[in-house]
Image (cartoon, rainbow, N blue to C red; front, top):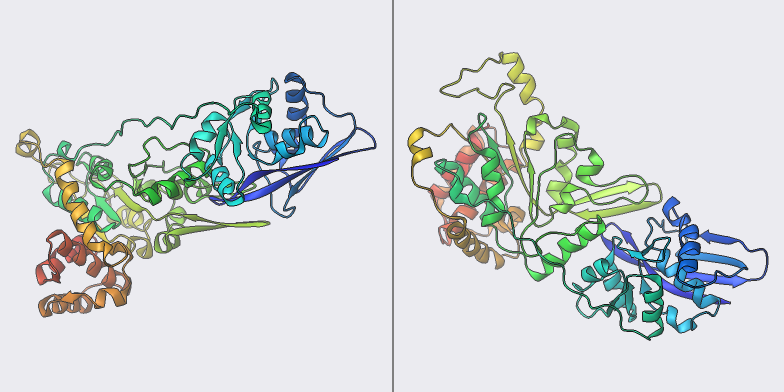
Length: 490
């Protein structure tokens, strides 16, 4: 006797349908599971036996063979418990064979209850692709609701899942995930630092990468944490992309419409930052920040090899992770904001606290940042310690006021088809540049240490500054401001 149901495997953040084939035949009562399962999948045999018994079903005292197809795709995790259990029941004719024609995901507890698993949104996508309903634990079912057109049914136990599969009950009512109130800092909390505030606005408007440097306590971390509050909300398409990335990592994003903000510790491993891990690779912090902000605080404490490992992903907007038998691509179209002290003690250039670092110590510290890595930052600005008048003075503009200008600047970029950060050289050349602006860029290229990449990045920032000014032509003062954001670190 044979039956088959459908489950889901995640390859990167993309969902692949997995056919769970179950054959119950004669021979010794052995439970075999094939199809490149990892340890968690192999252990499903014991969970399924116990869950069936706890739910009032008898496990067949015959040879049971389960095949997870395609057989050459690695399978990982406990999400295959529920489809295996439904397949066993259908193959042993305890339930009708057509009841197994569902997309199922869920980890079984020994008492028959269902636990949430990652990949709920992927189950909704597969459900739409093959035209079958999906049966999921309530938490995973809430994720699947993001997929338009998916027929989603929720069950909190194996017995309830069986009732849903045979059509005797419609399943639990599914409520959309409750969104937490965003914990964004408002830009009005930043006192003084007019130049840095302006740099943050330009950063948000063009989607640029930003490097902040300065002594401790000047507001670098505060400024970075304010960036999400001046970014536009995510579009519906972006919300689904971000939800897929978080679902693949087994997480639920707190606020669906707000851009994500991730701030990994400097002790993070390459797998934690870029993605990977043992077995099937999972997304890293770069991918969790997709369409949002990745903040690298205390940049000088990050290992140089880890920073250089980010160079290609920042350029391409995706991370390629290859493991034996599987190669995946994770999206990481995010803005990177980094903050660092100018020297090991942090006080070089401070007017009040003398720097105690030797020139050799400063040189060693700065060698931690390679030139190619620093070249990825379109905007680099330094912060000085604010004086008493600034700290005790009135607050600056609110995030809402700045966001309105950022949104208007981004609307001007929609006609070009991409953010200014992603403009190609040919697209930049086609824009309207004044002769004075062209002369300023040419002079900077010949008299400074601008690389070819830096040349393009200065022009991209100048275009963003023109967008904020609602100018159709890039003028000389736009270029001058853009160059000012590079010269601090050249």
